[in-house]
Image (cartoon, rainbow, N blue to C red; front, side, top):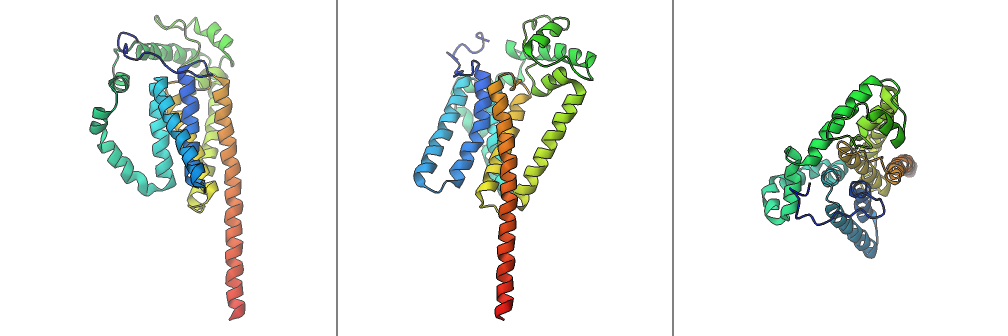
Amino acid sequence: DLSMFGDLQGRVSGFLGNPNMLGAYLVIAFPLALGQIKVSQKKISKFMYFLAALLIIVCTVLTGSRGAWIGLIVAIVAFFVIYNFKNIWFVILAGALIPLWQTVLPDYIINRFSSIFTMADSSVQMRLNIWRGAWNMAMDNWLAGIGVGEHAFRLVYNDYAVQGAESAVHTHSLLLQIFVDVGLVGLIVFAGIMFMYGQKCAVEIKHGNQSSKSRTMIVAGLSSIIGAFVMGLTDNIWYNYRVFIMFWIVVALTISLSRVNVRERESTRIISNMTSADIEFNR
């Protein structure tokens, strides 16, 4: 809305064609950079990953995507709190310093954030209208959905579009888009997959060695997905298939790391038992 954000001269979109999609990609990528900073042994590697993380933050700001900003903040908080719950005190302190941030951050960032909670921004109004039309469409096709793809959405949405939001090509909400596309059945399947994924990650994070590389990167992968989900509340982050595949690659790699974590834990237990047996034998 140029009437509200005239000071925002442009928005970075990179090779993804849309600043929101670039923002989603960066939200997924950032916790992985944090994880690599933690697990890297060489100072040059740590510096390079730190530089990458810094560039991701700067680029995310330049996308102008409020959903990406919030998703990135949540992903950062998730990473530090899940890695070690004692870090919650640093998060609380950072939250208490929000008034100080307002004196440091550029005005356009403050304006973009504050506009989320008002109806003055036309993009907020449009999203609400799209959600209304998409929800009605989903409820009329609640069991199996309307089918996947922009063509199917455009074809059916025309009958449900609310005035002022007729040109929508997706729902601007990940979960609502899944409900629209594949219905309640598909939504339940997706929820089940994500529940099992979160449960697997939680088990390995809880029982894994806190200093192990695999546990750290499991935390990073889980934080990426959490941040993506938060952004997905107000954007269909799967609209771009490059973000879609990135999402599932992170899920797959995290599960693979969970298996590595299991083997590391079993190896540690075997070595520990062997050491105990040697001590008893020597006695």
